[in-house]
Length: 135
Image (cartoon, rainbow, N blue to C red):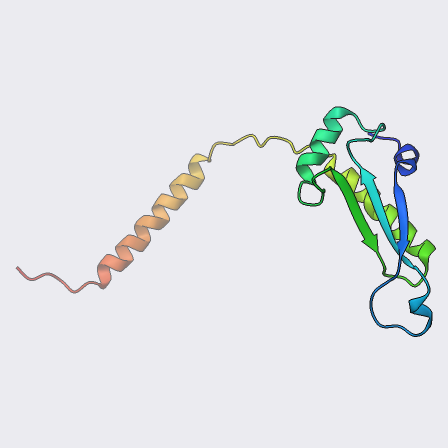
């Protein structure tokens, strides 16, 4: 598929201040981690893999085909970095899987027959509810 260690070397990380409530400490520590991955400049992925990721991750990529992810769940910068790395690898792995084409199957005769007989029974039941026609 792809070399995880090689793709991790292509990532760039930036630590930024986390949002949300906090005390005096929150204003001076950068615990939120932002990951950026330039898809076009990647040397680990093949051209077909890049095209597949471009189509599958179209809504998550910038116009320059850069993937940006953030994690600020933990108060620890190291924990946030490990979380975002695992999310990134999972995202790449799931989006590199090509979906198989569905082979349409024929509807079994027994299923068609059952549907038609059931349809006929309901039709007769409803026609019996009508008042008789007097000529």
